[in-house]
Structures are given as C-alpha cells and as structure tokens.
Image (cartoon, rainbow, N blue to C red):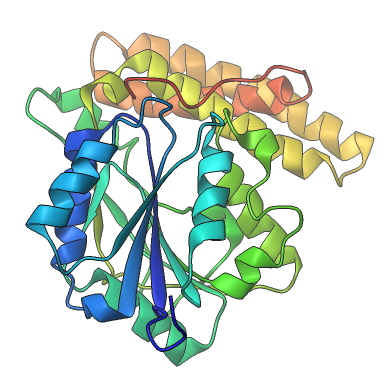
Length: 310
C-alpha cells in the first residue's frame, strides 16, 4: 500500500464463529458516512477452520467499495486476535468494534471528529444492547447488559473503557511492548481494560462521544443466569487483582472482608427476591457476586471468558 493510499483509520474486528453477525457488521461499515476511501477494515478470524472466510468473500461482492483485509489467527485467544489486528493495521487511528455489534452510519465520523477536536489518546462511545426474539423480560429488567453512558466530551477513566466501541491512536497501541494486549488475558478476557489501565498510567486521556452509536446483539446463550453470574465474578476478580497488586496487605484485607460481608448479604437478599421479581433478584445477585469476587481475587482461580456459542 502506497503512502498516498494509506488509510486514515483502520477498523479492527476480531471474529469467532459468528458469520451472520459479522456480515451484519460489515454491512453497517459499508454504510458509514465517513468516506470508505479513508478507512480499511481488518478482520482477524480466531477460528482455525476459517469459518469467516465465506462471509468476507460475500462482503466483497455486496460491498465492493469496502476495503477489507482478512487474516487467520490460529493461536486461540482474544488477545492474540486483537494484537494481530494491530499488527496488520495501516491507519494512524484504530477503531475497535466487536463481531456481534453493528454501527450507526455516523459512528466513525463522530469518533474521529471528537478525537481531533479534543486531542486525546482515545474516544469511547456507547454500546446499546439489542435483544433478539425469545428474550425473556427479566433479562431486560435486570439491566445487566446496559453500560454506563456520559455526556459527549466527558473525560472518563480506564474503568469505563472497552474495545467494543473505541477509537485509539495507533502510536499508543504500538508503543506497548511486547504487545498492546497482554496475552495472559487471552482466554479470560479483560485484555482491553488492562490496556487502557496501562495507557492511563502512561498519562493517556480518554473522552466520551455519546453520539457514536454501536448496537450489540445479546444472543440467547449469553442470557443464561450462569453466564451472567460467571461474568460478574470474572470481571470482579480481574478488577480486584489489579487493585491488590499495588496496595498494602491491610488495605487488601479490609476490602476482601467488606466483599465477603456485603456480597453474602446481597446474595441472601437476591435469593429471597427470586420468587417475586427475577429481574431485581438478578440485579442484586450480581452485586453480591461482585462483592464475593474481592475475596476470590486472592485465590488462583481463573475463569475462561471466551467459549463457543457465546
């Protein structure tokens, strides 16, 4: 690729056995108001069977104006796939979006405009859950899949940063050695939070763009109670292990005890509420599981966050 044709933005997509959702995402990227001559799409397939290849071929026919580069990453794990997209990307800005998401037409334009106007290292936007047919009412009422939103221009901390809807300066990603996303999180997830935490410690700044809309399909397998509670525990363990790494033993002890006491109370309350309001019970139960995660973070327990069908 010549310097003249080098894209301004590389849209980075990791995929694993989600062909229909991936095609929906590529359709939304082809419909961006941001000129297709100014961005490329990097798709890294983490399925050794290359199940996404037919989708890429179909997209080439359906959306010939879209520049898509497809590669296979045989090493299993989200960190390996994300790092491969960073390596392949040619743009000075890297936009991240997941294979179960799709973007509003002005998504990329709004992210790029906000980053340039604020001169920050990254811009994040909302991910709005989309519930398919067959979704039970309690899943929506528990609000587990809703993420915090802020006014456009709000400076946010790393705890609110994920790669489901993010635009990051490529130089910042490629400055981390040996890789932007730590491969220790390949199967557990949390590699994106870990990166933003690292960047924040390097002085990185992040702002919110609430108009850069992305929608996420909440598949039925992810609506199971075991998935929801396991994810709460996994994210809590990850967060508190990071916090404990630079705290005193007494501080760690206090937080762990608070988590056990508070978490147990929430779990008991959730159990009592289950027969009357499942949505509220799950909401409170999640608080309980996160509290207990403070203590579990002191153990060697590792939970796999990426598995087939989710």
